[in-house]
Structures are given as C-alpha cells and as structure tokens.
Image 1 (cartoon, helix red, strand yellow):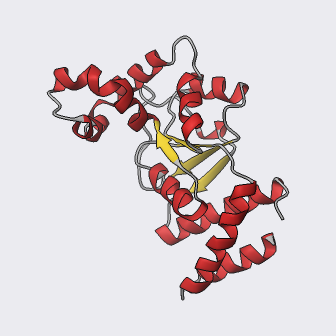
Image 2 (cartoon, one colour):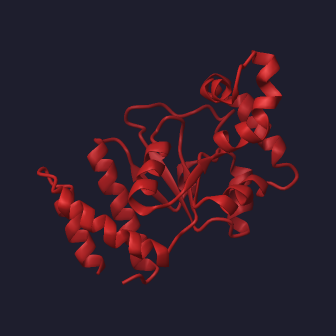
Length: 206
C-alpha cells in the first residue's frame, strides 16, 4: 500500500497536478491515519513555515494542532500583557507577539517551572501536533517522558535568518527529522507527504 500511495503522491505533485488522483491519495491516507496517529512536535525558527506545515498536516492527514503562542495567549499571556501594551483583545495581543518574542519566551518558561513538560502535556491532551516549541529545557523534559513521538524541524534558512538565542534555544540537530522549506509550496507539500509516508512505513502501516 505504501508503494501505491507514493506513486499517487508523485502523480499528484507532478507539473500537471491531477486533482482526482490527489483526492484518492488523501482518502487512503485518512484511513491510515486512524490506525497510526502520531504526536508530532513541529519546531524551527520564526516564520520558517511551521504553521504552513501544520496546516498541510491538518488538511491532508486530519491531525489537529495548536501552538504554544496561541495556547498560552488564551491561557494567561493576554491577561498578563494587556494593560502593559493596551491590547483591546486576545487577537491584538497575539498578532503583536513577534515584537515581544523574548517576553513571550520568558512568560512560557515561567509557566513551565518547575515542571518543564507541563505545557506540552496540556497541548497534546487536546491536539495531535504542538507547533512552535522554543525552549530546549522543555524539549528534553517532554522527550524524556514520552510526551511526543517525533520532533520535526522546518527549515527555510536559505531565505530567512535564525532567531536570537534569547527567544529560541532549540537547535536543528535536536529534531528527529527536518522538512526543507526552501522551495515552492508544492515542493513543501511533497516533502511533508514523503516524511509521513516514511513514518507510516517504519510504524508498519501497510
């Protein structure tokens, strides 16, 4: 079955995209995902495409996701920062997060003290994917307690810079896999499909 799915994927992502073949591919894949539904940690530097990868996984593989920023904004960050920056609502606070990366990073670190795996456990209780972890202490705490199955790094370093270590202490080597996002959106989709096919293979979904 994996060989068949890969053949369909190659056809679907050829220069002449065959929508019918792609829909058949997704139908088969959705059946498989009910058998193997992994807990995925999607990480990488800011604006390198993590949310886009998660959107693909949600749309094509029926995996739900949430980010540390979105989750914590609703949980406590908005209330913590609204008076300081005169935010009118949660969305305004969330949209301004890129201007206060270190402040958000420190607030989430504080939330995860002394239990560094706290936020990860809470997100994975409700979702299949945790998008955007930035703290290595929290990463290893979750890894050592089996909170997630695989960590995936999203890389667009040919076009975008790395984040400051003040707000991002994870490094690429810590992840189990890397998805290249230095090409087109079609290439990114294919890279995501290829990785998921491999994960199905090593987990004996056939």
